[in-house]
Image (cartoon, rainbow, N blue to C red; front, top):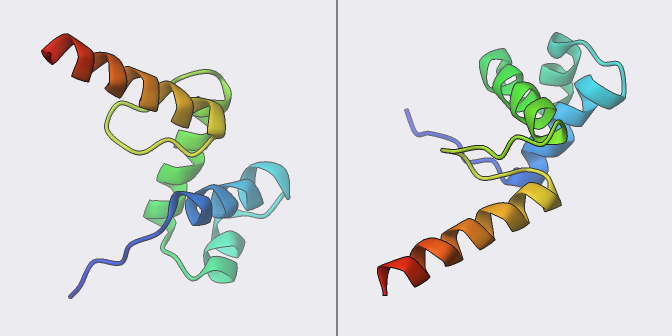
Amino acid sequence: MTRRYFSTDFKRDAACLVLDKDYSVSEACEAMGVGPTALRRWVEQLRAERSGKTPEKSKAMTPDQQRIQELEAKIRRIERE
Protein backbone atom coordinates (compact mmCIF):
# COMPACT_ATOMS: atom_id res chain seq x y z
CA MET A 1 0.00 0.00 0.00
CA THR A 2 1.44 3.38 -0.94
CA ARG A 3 1.35 6.22 1.51
CA ARG A 4 -0.66 9.25 0.41
CA TYR A 5 0.83 12.72 0.64
CA PHE A 6 -1.23 15.75 1.63
CA SER A 7 -0.03 19.33 1.30
CA THR A 8 -0.04 21.60 4.33
CA ASP A 9 -2.78 23.66 2.65
CA PHE A 10 -4.95 20.56 2.30
CA LYS A 11 -4.35 19.58 5.94
CA ARG A 12 -5.17 23.10 7.13
CA ASP A 13 -8.33 23.22 5.00
CA ALA A 14 -9.48 19.85 6.33
CA ALA A 15 -8.80 20.83 9.95
CA CYS A 16 -10.58 24.17 9.43
CA LEU A 17 -13.77 22.30 8.54
CA VAL A 18 -13.82 20.90 12.07
CA LEU A 19 -12.49 23.94 13.93
CA ASP A 20 -14.20 26.74 12.02
CA LYS A 21 -17.13 25.29 10.05
CA ASP A 22 -18.70 23.05 12.71
CA TYR A 23 -18.20 19.83 10.77
CA SER A 24 -17.87 16.67 12.82
CA VAL A 25 -14.68 14.69 12.28
CA SER A 26 -16.61 12.04 10.35
CA GLU A 27 -18.32 14.67 8.14
CA ALA A 28 -14.99 16.33 7.38
CA CYS A 29 -13.39 12.95 6.64
CA GLU A 30 -16.11 12.16 4.15
CA ALA A 31 -15.94 15.61 2.55
CA MET A 32 -12.14 15.52 2.18
CA GLY A 33 -11.62 11.80 1.56
CA VAL A 34 -9.26 11.19 4.47
CA GLY A 35 -9.24 8.92 7.47
CA PRO A 36 -10.22 9.99 10.98
CA THR A 37 -6.82 9.35 12.56
CA ALA A 38 -5.03 11.72 10.19
CA LEU A 39 -7.75 14.36 10.45
CA ARG A 40 -7.74 14.30 14.26
CA ARG A 41 -3.96 14.76 14.20
CA TRP A 42 -4.28 17.75 11.85
CA VAL A 43 -7.03 19.30 13.98
CA GLU A 44 -4.90 18.99 17.12
CA GLN A 45 -1.87 20.43 15.32
CA LEU A 46 -3.82 23.40 13.97
CA ARG A 47 -5.40 24.03 17.37
CA ALA A 48 -1.92 24.01 18.97
CA GLU A 49 -0.45 26.29 16.31
CA ARG A 50 -3.27 28.77 16.74
CA SER A 51 -2.44 28.91 20.44
CA GLY A 52 1.20 29.71 19.60
CA LYS A 53 2.90 26.30 19.71
CA THR A 54 5.33 25.57 16.88
CA PRO A 55 5.27 21.90 15.81
CA GLU A 56 8.57 20.12 16.40
CA LYS A 57 8.39 17.24 13.95
CA SER A 58 5.83 18.20 11.30
CA LYS A 59 5.60 21.07 8.88
CA ALA A 60 3.62 24.00 10.25
CA MET A 61 0.17 24.76 8.82
CA THR A 62 -0.25 28.43 9.73
CA PRO A 63 1.81 31.17 8.05
CA ASP A 64 3.12 32.48 11.39
CA GLN A 65 4.32 29.06 12.52
CA GLN A 66 5.79 28.35 9.07
CA ARG A 67 7.84 31.55 9.39
CA ILE A 68 9.02 30.54 12.86
CA GLN A 69 10.14 27.16 11.49
CA GLU A 70 12.02 28.86 8.64
CA LEU A 71 13.81 31.20 11.05
CA GLU A 72 14.68 28.38 13.43
CA ALA A 73 16.17 26.40 10.53
CA LYS A 74 18.17 29.45 9.46
CA ILE A 75 19.54 29.86 12.99
CA ARG A 76 20.60 26.18 13.07
CA ARG A 77 22.41 26.60 9.72
CA ILE A 78 24.23 29.70 10.94
CA GLU A 79 25.22 27.99 14.19
CA ARG A 80 26.72 25.06 12.21
CA GLU A 81 28.89 27.36 10.09
